[in-house]
Amino acid sequence: MNINFVEEVTKRKEAIMKDLVGLIQINSELTTFDPNRKHAPFGEGIDEALTYMLNIGKRDGFSTLNADHYAGHIEYGQQDEYVGMVGHLDVVPAGSGWSYPPYGAVVADGKMYGRGTEDDKGPTLAAYYAMKILKDLQVPLSKRIKLVLGTDEETAWRCVNYYFKHYPEQPVAGFIPDSEFPLTYGEKGILKVVVKGKNEPSKLVRFDSGLRDNMVPDHALAIVSDKDLKEKFEAFLSKHKYSGKVSEEGANLVLEIDGKSAHGSTPDEGVNAAYLMVHFFNEVGITNAFIDAINTYLLDDTKGVKIGVDYLDKEMGPVTVNAGVFKLENNQFEIILNPRYPNGVDPESFIKRFETAFSSLGLKVELGKHQRLLYVDPKSAMIQTLMEAYKKYSKDYEAKPLTTGGGTFARAMKNSVAFGPHFPNKPSYIHQKDEYIILDDFFMSIAIYADALYQLAK
Image (cartoon, rainbow, N blue to C red; front, side, top):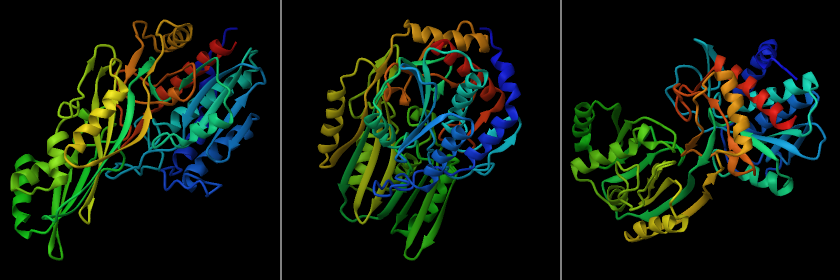
């Protein structure tokens, strides 16, 4: 059966845009997690986004399921075997400094701006419309198609853990629209490491930097009890051409400095604002256990050299360590790390090294979620099918499948890999201000996904 999927997407552009605007305009940042809040365990905004997508599915005649507001799915067909997709509707905090409102869904210069346009509301809607095109055309298929809707990808994956616990059936093939084209067959292992400690009283009264462990902090705030530092901080900002400011708060000074955010999988692409502030402390001689821990094991080190976990795999790249959250108040502090490891690293030894390093300073180390490494044979039939769909529309005939330091829901569902939607050699503002999706690329991704689903499910 010969289907012109580009033409089918073009016919639906107006409807697609209307649905996309409505989805992006929902603020679906995590508020709090409360399992006793039955109608919205991750907060009202996230549940609004889930309801929005499920209602679109109902509107278009699909079978839908709400998994107790933790997740949901939209499904086409009743065959025993299925081809699966998993997207997510939660987003990281918008942060500040946007050129357009982060939940405005503003279209300018062929792009739509907004938190979630590329990670991952836009791609989730692209996967939905790919499935819808097949349903509209009543294409004969031998397998069901199911789009699972996650709501907690950016934090702890409680959504998919809950979903697959209660609906454990696994696909014969599947993809996750939350990465890059042409395709990602290997994903680094990801940890969450929380370092906690106590300070003796010092000039540093409070420190606050970072929103999530998987984001490079783009702002740091410190309150110090020494007003004589005002001119020194201003000179520090001027000397290094950093953006920041200083103000007075009673007997204290409030110091603020800006860095550059980036995804936690690529911390070297950002500028960690907390580290910039610590460089100032080092210049003026402010020290305590919190600053010592940063200097000893973290400062300006995105590869884990100081901790002793650095390693480079030729296929998957290096170990990375993002220090994403720094909190100090009432002489108690917490630093949250986001380390990632490639093939060739023993996970247990890797984890132990973090525990050994920080405990040597008398600090407590707590381990959060551990997403183990994903690796699928790049020569498998499923990957060859997906690669051919990408090449057919992109004309990128020399494309090779990729590995990444990022983590996707491909780890949550068997027989799956990450597949688009970001095209090669294009800038990305995922987890940064001014996140956008290029609309021509967005529409092309729908055609690619539709063809891929057809090939996998026919």
